[in-house]
Amino acid sequence: MDLFTPHALVRPPEVSVLAGLPVRRTLVAVYALTGGLAGIAGIIATARLRASDPSFVGLLIELSAITAVVVGGTSLAGGRVRVLGTVVGAVLIQLLTNTLVSHGAPNSFARIIQGVIIVAAVYVQRLGRRGL
Image 1 (cartoon, rainbow, N blue to C red):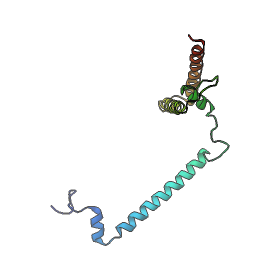
Image 2: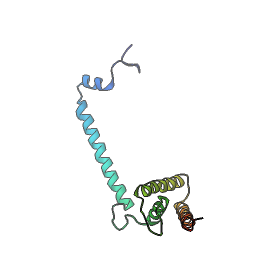
Image 3: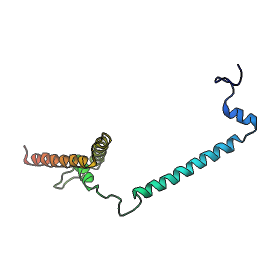
Image 4: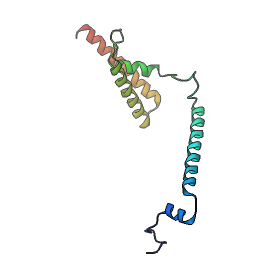
């Protein structure tokens, strides 16, 4: 078996060392450059999405927050707050929204579904208070 076949016994890093190339220094430099460029790309993406602007953080998520609390079992009329239920509700609402959007539904349709969930939860809570 010669060294020019695809099944050579010598791996490329070993060949580079045998050739006298600085393998470790090259790998560290490549990883550092890649990490730096990824960091710059993240900063640019954050700036483009305005995700770091404090006036836009949390904008238009009020409906999602209310839906998460209601789905979590907290009554809109007041009373006990269930923190674990609210966390589960937030996860479910985020899962629902991401599923709808990833299947091509517009974000406005996901908000309509959240509104329907709130209306249904208020109706169920109202029936529960009446004892029906």
